Picture 1 (spheres, one colour):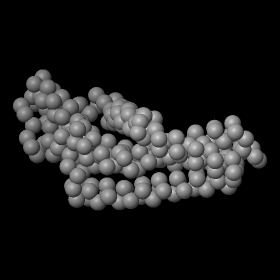
Picture 2 (cartoon, one colour; picture 1 turned 45 degrees about the horizontal axis):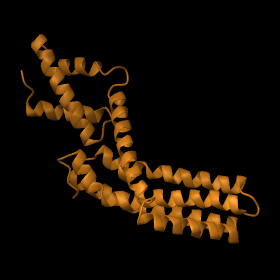
Picture 3 (cartoon, helix red, strand yellow; picture 1 turned 90 degrees about the horizontal axis):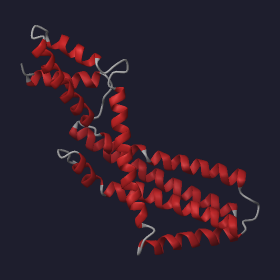
Picture 4 (tube, one colour; picture 1 turned 135 degrees about the vertical axis):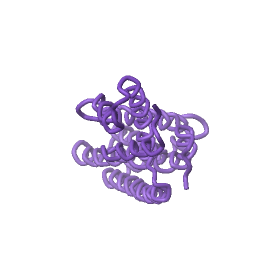
Length: 229
């Protein structure tokens, strides 16, 4: 016995009722449930659709779909970080390494000359720039999601989740500067903070400028049916 299109739509509704909001995860779970329900019907053809669905759902355990959801989210987060790392490595190769060295030298000279005032100013500029870009990107994503009626997990990771790590980095750097930095930056302290600021700038730039521009390509590669509206 095969599921009807109406029953498939009921399975989509069922996953949404169990807090799975991303369309790709819903599709993966619906496919699993549908295959399992059809297998159950082969063994027990007298069961109703709802009864077979309940039996299938119980196989996911106490936490329902959350374990599968968490595993998929972890896998896509790792994929995103690999992509991020590939783009980050480009900043330490020609020709972009020239810009990286320029950033480092600019931060180094500023720290030597102006100390904490310069450090806090750089931190404020980078964090504010990142947050503003992040907010604009979120508006774009929400508009697309509203038009399509679908959310995608990797899309949320690219546009929503991992820049928060940059925000936490900024907060931690602010604390480090206030607690651990010396009154006068010597060569070693200046090199240390210049390196940190350079890495932070590269990370934020890739997260909120480079990868969003490549988002459609990345998402279509992962989800062939994805289209940015």
